[in-house]
Length: 92
View 1 (cartoon, rainbow, N blue to C red):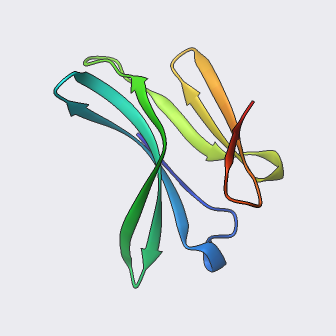
View 2: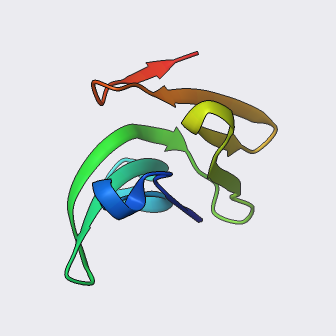
View 3: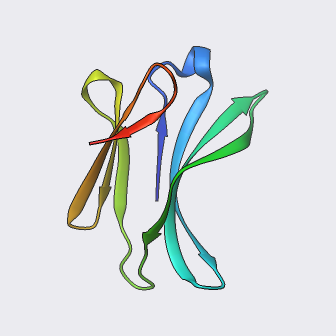
């Protein structure tokens, strides 16, 4: 559903994906960080998981906002998370 490049992508090679997946219990959305190397994406690190999804109308947006904050908008609500220097996500 969305992709956001790390503001420091040239050094970090991180990209963030917001996507839908299914497992044996249902349909969900997930935010994950991947690492780019030699034009290949690998090393998935799941940051937020099991966000409820919908079969027919499933939307959202991911982008970097002020102060390098990774912002995720989900349906009519939003979750704001900040990428800290120690690589931890801090919910707000």
